[in-house]
Structures are given as structure tokens and as C-alpha cells.
Length: 507
Image (cartoon, rainbow, N blue to C red; front, side, top):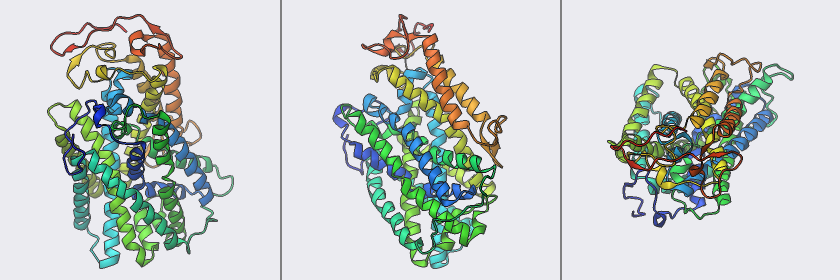
């Protein structure tokens, strides 16, 4: 495969040959950080102020959520170099040959949500900035044109593939960071770190607001869990694991820059233009443009364009890649265009028919609530397998075959699937998003949203318990055997073409 950025990538999610793995952990950092160092992240950074916290309380919630989320995410970077494929395919080892579609489905929904967020927030900023600069009318037509052009640019990058995406993110990391730093000078005169918030000391809403803000921040790094393998699969298998995980962790920790920008500017908006921070109808983009000095309008537009391109491409590239494996009639390019078109439709319907802000934020939160338990199962599966996988057996689904180490019961590993389904459903019942979505057990902790930590803990405990009570075949653990759990001497069916019935395993 040529490394030219202008050559359309033709590979799907088959294993990347060792000779073509030329990426470095630094490249993983660039793509991950570039995809999160965006205007959409600034919007998430404004939520602590929207929830009524003071600046310092909001900063504490942001740092807590960001570091915890980065720690949860980092191990998901190991599957790509190890198996040479994306994380959904690697999940075959823990959910079964057919059970891997859970990861594909979660990545599809996550991509639609965050692609929509990037198109919406960047499009609004571009139109708003152009209105302030040259008097461009703020009409449905101009917003529609901005969304369509922006989404089209993102799809072009995704169609060309990984090398073009890496090139875009190399530029985005430096350019967007410089523009955010420039914002220090734009808003330094108005910024007051003593901003008190609206919650009085001892207010019963403080902890629900603090935890809610931290969880929203945490959801940003967690949203990358299904996509890390899409990029890290180009890193050589022999690369030290600490360097790979370090790159993924530092990429998310570095997003303190856009989070801080969003938090600081939101506190200024709440002071100088409070109407834009009304929790019932927040408009962070409009508020930012209202308080920004005239010379900063162009940088705001550039942040929206560059950062939005990064978020959109990192979300859409992997999903088009994986969707092509689930539906063989689609090539990677066709799948990317198809998913991108659905996402654009979602943006237009949400923007002009429903409350887009509320629709996307609710949708994204619920998807992350379901994705986090899947990530826990992947991490614990990696530990119990001692990092050993059979790359050929992982490709059984993609090659339309049957059998192999990961066939389990008719292609489904009910242990991992049960742990994921139970923990995800339990987490969904405890979601508490006032005015958007409150689960049947949403008030379980006095209004505090405990869905994400509850889902993480439940998945970990239940998955390990099932592995101990119902041991998996010894063949899935490799030469060193299992760690923490037991193994069973259960025969494994051979890999055969799909037309040949494979023996049904009873495990």
C-alpha cells in the first residue's frame, strides 16, 4: 500500500501486514489529540458552569473526569498493534465471532453522535463568526449550507483514509492549540477565576452537579474507546506497550486546553451575557461570539473549521471501516459515504425539526453509558488472556467463515455478552439527565448520576465471576494459560468456510 496521502486507502479491517505498519505512538497521539482538541470539546467544557458550579469547582470536576476517563481509555490502544485490526474485530475474542457486532454497533452510534456534534458546533461558529465579520445572514439556509459544506469536507478526508487523516491532524494539533492559546490574550481582561457560580454553599444540588459535570467530561475520552484500534493498528506489534498507552493517555490529558478554554469563557459568558447560559436553552457558541473581541472572530472560525475537521474525521473513518466488514456488499469508501450521509441527515433533522443540543447530548450520553461496560470487558479480557490473541481466528467473521478459538456457542460468547448487557441496562436505568432523560432508578443516589461508575463496576465484577464459574476453553488463553480465572478442556471447532456446518460448541 502506498503511503501517499492522496491515494485512496483500499484496506478494510483485515490485519495490516507488518511491512505496512509504519506509524508511531506519536502519530496515535496526534490523531487522538487532534480529534478532541476541538470546538466541540469547548462546548463540553462549558457544562460545569451551566450546572451552576464556580470556576474552581468546575476545574476540579474537569480534571477529575478527564484523568479518570484517560485512564479507562488508555488500555484500549493495545489491541490495534497486537492484532493489526480495529477494536470491534478484536472484541471477537471476548464476545464471540458474531458477538463482535456489539462493538461495531456501539462505534456506529458513537460516530453519528460525535460527527453530528462537530458539524453542528463548527457550522454554528462559522456562520456566527461570518455574521459578525461580514454581515452574513443567520438564516436556516446559511446554516444548512455551512453544515453541508463542512460535512462534505470531512467525508472527503475519510474517503482518502488514514494517511490523509493523519496529515490533517498533524496540522490541527498545532494550529488549534495555538488558536486556543491566543484566546488567553483575547479574554484575559474579562476572566475572573473567582467566579462564584450560582450554587450556594451546602446546596443539595452541589454534588449532583459536580458529579454530573465530571461524568460529562469523562464521557469525552471514553467515546474514543471503540476507535483507538482504527489508528493504532498501523503501529508495529513490537512497540513497547507503555509507549502506546502513554500516547493515548497523554492525548486525552492534553485536552485540558480546550476544556479549560470552554470553562473559562463560559464563566465570562455567565457574567457578561448570562442569557446565553440559560440551562433551559444554552447557546455557548452565541455567547462566545458575543463576548469575543472583534479581532478574535477569525480565530474562532478557524478553530471551528480545523477542530471540527479533526473530530469529524476521527469519528467517521473508523465506522466506515468497520461497517464495511459487517455488510460485505459495502467497500470501505461506500460504507463511509453511506454512514456520513445518514449522519448529515441526522444533523439536518435535529437542527431544523427538534432541539438539536438536547437531542445530541442525550443521545451521546446514553451511548457512552453503554460503551463503558464494553471497554471494561475488553480490558479484563486482555488481562485474563495475558495479552495473547490469535489474529487469524479474529478474522473468521470478516472472511465469512465458521469455527475457530472464538466460536464459543454458535459464534456467541454468552459470558461477555451477559456481563455487557446486564451492566449496560443497569447503568441506563440510573441515568439522571434532568429535562432530558431520567431512568427508572435515576434518583437512586439522591439525584446524583451514578450510571457510568455503576456500569463500570458491574461489568468488572460480573464478567470475572462468569469466567470463574463457567471457564472458557483452554485454547483461547495461549501457551501461558489464564490469569485470575480457570480454563476448561473443551474442544475447539476448526475454521471452515461458512457453507460447511461447523460443530456447535457447548461452552
